[in-house]
Length: 159
Image 1 (spheres, one colour):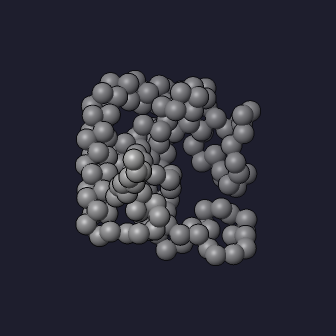
Image 2 (tube, one colour):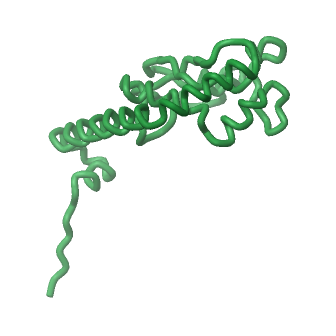
C-alpha cells in the first residue's frame, strides 16, 4: 500500500518549474475567464452603472469618471530603498502603463490644494455619493472595462 503523488501543472508553476505548454494553457484559460466574467459583469451591472453615473453627476460638478495612470503587466519593484519623494507609485517600473477608470468619489481636482495624500475615513474631499460608492465598492465597477481590454485581470495582484 504505497502513496502516490500527482504534480498538477499549477503545482509545478508554484515550485518555479515553468512548463511552456502548461503555462500557455493557463494564461489562455485565465484570459478567457476574464473576458467572459467581465462581459457578463458589464451586462448585469450596466443599469446600476447608469444610476450611479447620474447620482455622481447630480451630487457634484465635474466628470462622472476618474482616470488615473497605473503600471500594469510586467510590473516589477525597485530592488532596494524607498521610492523617490516617498511616492509609492514611482516605485513601480518597467511595467506597461495604462489608464484605470473609476466612478469619481471625490470633488473635482481634489489634490490641487493638498497635493497627493492618502484618503482617510473623514476625508472632506469625498462627496456624499462618493462615500456610499466607496463603502459598497461600486466606484470600482468601471474597472471591468480595463479587464475586458486586457489591462487588468480579475485574478492576481492589483495594479
